[in-house]
Image (cartoon, rainbow, N blue to C red):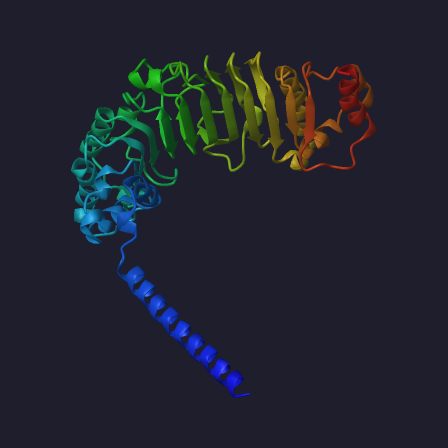
Length: 403
């Protein structure tokens, strides 16, 4: 019994010693971890990635964290002047915004590459006068910086249409643009004032630009517009909620190298809803492979040249809320759209397309061949289980033909 008691005592003492040593070691690790600046030991590429999610102003503020961070901001490959809303004294707003943007750009390492540069001009919007407080000097200096540096991706946000644009500063200088190295250009709330039948004059940007994204941008000044004809190397084009100031416009997309086209709604400045039924669209894109369009209703496609089209996605927004007259007009446009896209191999349509096809007389739908001559897959998004027999036969007839 004494031997067992002694053994238990020794085991207890051993456990206490181990516990004490473990606690001491854990405290030492905690102190070491607390005193260690792990972020500063990260390589520049990781620090740059972390700072790429932050605005330029916050990136500069990191310079006070340590000597290691002192000039990290100066070599950032991703620079964002986005979401900056200042409201200092109105007499200083122009200088404040100009000094912030141009001071940052001029103070960075000019040998460091810039992959992305984003500028949101909302920061220069005067909350008192409801106008931009910018001058042409700022636009000239900013674009001169872009021209003199190898910037791959430029993104600019102007202002919603109910606010006054800095028309005297940017539009004349930016479009047609002289952006020699930019391959991807994003513009939001930008109005392109072009005379009727004007083709953008050749420029370095027209030769180098491969991706163009236009969000809520306006095209004014003519009944026939062909704004992309000079961008001969354009491969991807995104038009989201673009606006026009005329009814009966013929809008042309001429792009010999275009591979992907994405259209999301067309709007008229004086109409709350879309005006798709009064717009004529012409597309000449011999290399287009993917086309996605999300429209209010079927559109008048007066001319299409898409010989290698593979993927097609069509979605309509208001097919179920149209008048009886507009229904049949939309049905006619829909059938013409199908015929224009007859090369597509993978087709996605929405339930509102089925709503329109229901209007067709059974005999008329039977006589009309399904236009997709190379079809491999057909998908109905937001599937409607109540597909009429004549519409189902219309689709199945095509499936049987390809077997």
